[in-house]
Amino acid sequence: MKKYTILFVAATLLCVAYASTVYKEQPKVPYPEGFRQWKHVKSGAIGPKSKGFAQFGGFHHIYANSEALRGYESGIFPQGSVLVFDKFEMIDDGNGNVIEGKRTSMDVMLKDIRYDSTGGWGYEEFLGDSKTERAPKMLMTGCYQCHSNKKNNDFVFSKMRN
Image 1 (tube, rainbow, N blue to C red):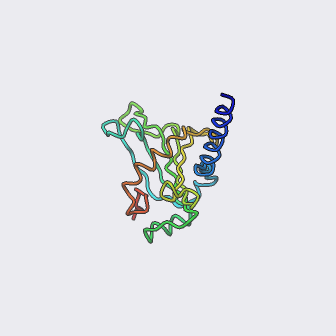
Image 2: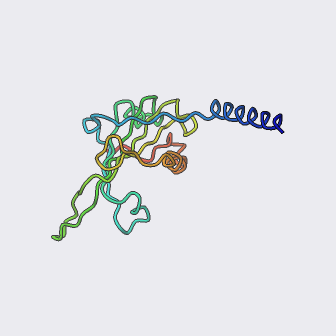
Image 3: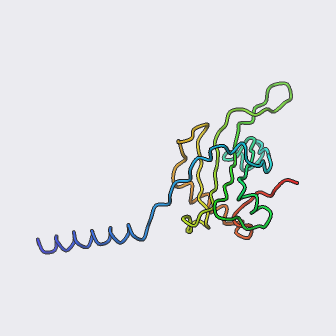
């Protein structure tokens, strides 16, 4: 019995060691300091009648760093490209105007070879105005699943506004 226990423990440790070398947790995408000084790509609004309102509703503004700007021009985003999808509440002010409310979240995409399992992009969502509070890890997989529909556009949905 003791022999089988030792074999079981050894096999378990071997499996854990193997799994830790095969599965590497992807690095966190850093908060994009100074992104408001980057190029504004475009803005949009997703209203209550949209199917995507629950997740993406409100106003959004997209910003791109200099590397990402080259990607918009060529269609292939170089390493170091960062895109920011800055989302805000949509508020009816009672006077027939819809105004921007507080930030709900900020999605960030970072092009880096370390994210090879998600098309070369790292995905992150920062909650509210926080630079550290992040959405659950499973979001990275969900982001990639949706963005994989845009593989022919290097996984990017947006186009530069003329």
